Length: 114
Image 1 (spheres, rainbow, N blue to C red):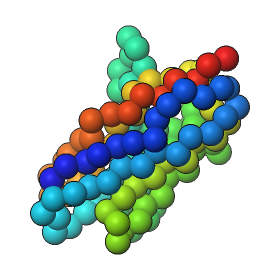
Image 2: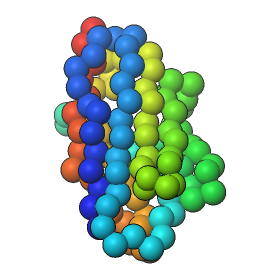
Image 3: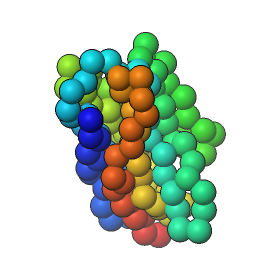
Image 4: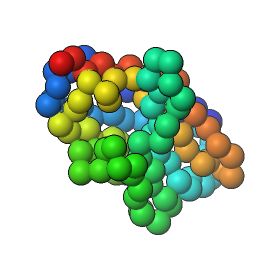
């Protein structure tokens, strides 16, 4: 099983980006999926999660700006990021609970300029 994240880039403050993460391989079940980010010199933090049932959760820092969604048929999870701020800069990692194991993607860089 592999997770492949894409969609990062450089954007000005106030702009938007959409990240995608595709799970591939021998997949029998997918539970929760989500996104973490890690800024330089900081710990990795959760920015969005979605359960197998479709419930979502966000930290206060991104509520109202980020939206996570998933396409079960495509084994894909998305993160729509709007009203981006310089403090959103970091490497974004997707994760998935697949076949009763946790997997991480390789990370995609998001840089928000002021």
